[in-house]
Every structure is written in structure tokens, then in C-alpha cells.
Length: 446
Ligand code: GAP
Image (cartoon, rainbow, N blue to C red; front, side):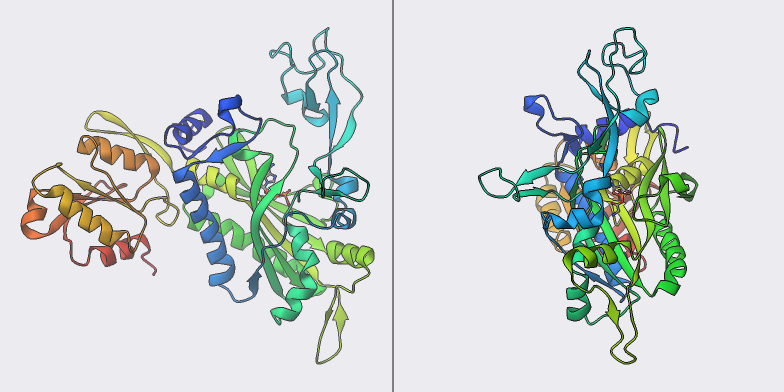
């Protein structure tokens, strides 16, 4: 289990207290499974995405980037199988007017008697189960007429398949190569979602890796390891992670094999990311429906084939949540409780806080100039409000790895104290060269 101090309530409360993440539309009473990201939440989210791009694009040369449209031609979803098969079985209760996932009834609470499951109370009156499509539908143009119905994408992956041929030409690639994209997807989720674990709109980080069919198993194993290691590199305890292969009856309609990277949340194991062997399902389906040939033709030998696809598909919100939970800690400092997020420095929303000890004697002026120099290099924050201990704790709570304190000695000899969030060591270091020194500590591998 993650540290005993971590509960979902504490994470939700920290997120709200420090403005990372909070319920959307709150002034109207909120809207189910929908959240807004505040200042630190946006910064953390951007850092997670940046680390994903770094692993996909900067640290390899066989993956290219794409940003495809959210609303695609409706035939996309016919070909992909989402129109027919992207459904959940639902039942309605005629008494409490609530809707439940038919396959989760045993874990859900009755709308009238929360101590019971739906259907267990004498007053419950459940309908037969029926399939409910998870795609959000909308229309193009002002009039709702046939032919104008479109869908908000339920996964970013399909945009990649539609552009396969274009990328093959523009990027001058041959399999094995991948196309990566990050963007919002939308699903009409009914099941209540454990904070941001399951939401109506969410960002996905997906990469479709196109390979010669005979190499599919090799690349499936490669990507399982790569993706597992990514979470570990960014600070998650490997004991809190596992790779779980799907049973045959769990597999999506497009997949011949899928393994999930799962994290041990305070409430149990949950999926962070799926690595799927999609075979040639998608390219063949789009070729059939569109009439376009979606294959690779070797310019030298003339060999032609439909590449198979290995897909690592992760969620930004879910991995953010896992990074925060795994980093969450409580300890005691000077007899007071301290909440600290021991986030990997690459993920921390703020890298360094600059704190003048006093609001006089030249401290604020010098602190401000140090801050203005540091912020040219890393995300820095200036804070002169309240006792120094409280300011440290505010930074610990948002995961800031370093704090620079300016005191009377700083004014005399241009040195500052550099405090480490985790070891709590305070070192006296010169202001000159501080930015470079900090960058070295934040990213020791450069
Ligand atoms: N293209 C394959 C695909 O979309 P998925 O397992 O349905 O596969 C991939 O989704 C990832 O997207 C999940 O592992 C999860 O991290 C994230 N995800 C899916 N549905 C979500 C939801 N309703 N809320 C938040 N994240 C979600």
C-alpha cells in the first residue's frame, strides 16, 4: 500500500485547498465527474505531458507528433467499431430515477437506501439492462437533421489512423515508427469516478506504433517495459505498480492482447495506462470504409503490407493522481504536522521558492532580484507573506523541491540558504551561480 497517511479524502482536500483540482461549475452545485484544474494543477499537468513528450519524441527518433481534430468525420466511428460496440450495459430504476452500470450493481448504492445495492430494496424497480453508447453526440450546423450528427472523440487514437498515410509521406517514415498525440477525449461515463480517475472529459497521451506484422510481439513487450519504467523514473515506487494482462473476456473489440499498467490507489488497484496489440484492425477497417489503401509499400522491393499497431494509451489525469498520491507524505517538524508532496523535481509545479526572511532591511529588494534571475531559468515563486516556517510549509505542500531564503547575511555577503524539501538540509551558497547550481540539482542528468 502507499503510505498509510494517504487517503483519497486527504488528496482531494489538498487539491482543493491549494487549488490544484476542484469540482467544475461549483456555483451551480457542480456537475458529476467533471473537474477544473487551477494554477498548480495546470503546471503539474503540463509537466506530466512534457515528460511524456520527452520520452516519446526527444529521447527517441522513431516517433513523430500529431494533433488531430476532436470532431472527425462520423464514418470514423462506424469503421472503428465505436458506434456499434463502445457501450456499457445500463439499468434504470423507475423508483429513484437513477441509472446504474448493470455490471457494477453489486458495488453501487441504492438511490433510496444507500446501505443496499440497487435492486435489493423492496421498492427498487429496475428495468432490463440495455446497451448505452458512451460517445457524446452533437450536430454540425444550426439544424438537427440527418447527416449532421457528429461525435466528440472517445479516444485520440482514431485521428492517428486517419492520418497514417499523410504522416507516412510527410515524415518519410517506414515501420517500425510511431505517431504520438496528447489531447482531450470525451466519454459519457455513468459510474461515479473516484475524483479524477474517471471523468467525462480527460486528456489522453496515446501513441500508435506501426510495425511489420512479424515484429508485433517484440514491440508489445518493448512498450510494456518502456511505459512501466516511465512511471518509476518519475518517482512512483515500483511496489505500487504492476502490469496486468487482460483476460480474453476483458479485451476491447480491436485488441488481441492488452496489458494495463496499474497503480495501487488507496482504494485498490486501478488502470493508469493500457498497452494494446491492435493488430491491423484499425487500418484495415478504415481502408474498408473509406476506400483508401492504408498500407506500407517498400519503395525498394515493392513489398506491401498493412502494419500492425502496438498502442500505449495513458491518461494525464490518472497519472497525475498517482504521482500525487505516491508523493504524499506527512511528518512532524518542530512539533508541528507537515504535509509534503515529494514530487519528482521534473513534475513539481514550482521548482524553487524565494523567501525574504524579513519584510525590511533590504531583504525584499535582494530577494526580488534573486527571484527575477531564477525565474529566467526555472519556474520560481516569490513569497514574503507570514512567518518563514509557514511559508516553507506552503511550499512543501505543493511539492517545491527547493527554497532560497534571504537574510541579513545575504545582504552583507551575497550568500543565501538553500533548503532541500526532502532532507531539510540548509546549505549556505553564493547568489552568483545559484541558477546553474539549481538546474544541476533539479536535473542531475542534464
Ligand atoms: N485508445 C485506447 C484507449 O482509449 P482506454 O483504456 O479506454 O484505451 C486509455 O483509455 C487511458 O485513458 C486509460 O488507461 C486511462 O488512463 C484514460 N481514461 C480512459 N477513460 C477515462 C476516463 N473516463 N477518465 C479519465 N481517464 C480515462
